[in-house]
Length: 186
Image (cartoon, rainbow, N blue to C red):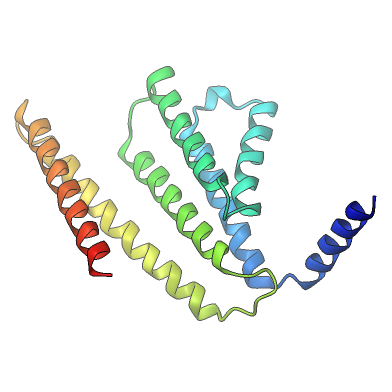
């Protein structure tokens, strides 16, 4: 009983010390994950229980960004995308694909930021702006590259898919080489 009382006191003490910036980052995680889930899942599965479950999935990474919950939320989002396209036959729209990918990346990078920020830390707003600006650059570059590869895939009747596949593999190999070089450079 004493251990439980001590935990309640610790939670109460921590709740009184929470500052605004880490709280806003965690709120942004919740909103980003929830919107991503709503875009990924088909409208046919939205019932009260399903929405409650998706809300719980969106709360988990906001509460525990250092744990397994961001990965779990990303997997649930991808599962919803697969359910919508393969299970319900929803056609793949480029805008929806880019939006879900963007929201997955933003949730991931916001969880990384939230994992670094202490609850009671005084955070310079410029830090968050720089973090989100860098994330916006990554999202923009990925979207432009994705659209270019999708357009490349439509070139030619049957050869376009092969060209897009080869281009995608070359990008993956180049990124792997770059990451390996960066790891060895340390």
